[in-house]
Amino acid sequence: RVGAPESPAKPVGTSTPKAAAGSRSQGADPHEGGRLASLCREVEICRSCELHRGRTNTVFGEGDTSAKLMFVGEGPGADEDAQGRPFVGRAGVLLTRIIEAMGLKRGQVYIGNIVKCRPPGNRVPEPDEIASCLPYLEKQIETIRPEIICTLGNVATQTITGERRPISEMRGKTYAYRTSKVVPTYHPAACLRNPDCKKLVCED
Image (cartoon, rainbow, N blue to C red):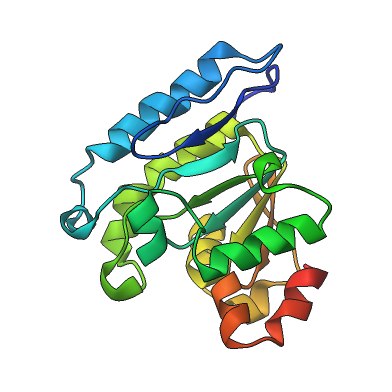
């Protein structure tokens, strides 16, 4: 759905409800950080669906805005809602360990979610909530232009690929999203519930 030609490297930055700007690195495209900062401000004031009523913070996303690898989860949980950052709870700790096991640092990838506000009780986002929030993610992907998008769990995988099969059937294969390769795997929270999933995530 989205895509753009290659451009010079973009700055490394963290986007939260309180600060969307990143530090400008040498040779960076100064407009890219601005695009995400502007988009983050849109998310902060978004009232497009009912999820805004219960949020403490929006959770825009964070990481290297020129990352080759982008992780996409389902939505914020309680810790993420409190801090305004993605994947900072128990599942986030595990995701960070997974990234490090790949030989990378968390700051070298970009991490976001399908929806930017926490669903009540961490329930699965409703279709209308996903539809309202998806344009923000599409614009993030358009700006970052990752080579690989790793979708975490059913909601992220089904939303990005358009498939409606469970993650157990979709993992182990690659899909396409514009110019990016999509690699689905289990959500870290699933690994916390079922440690057997960890081996499969490592394989993916």
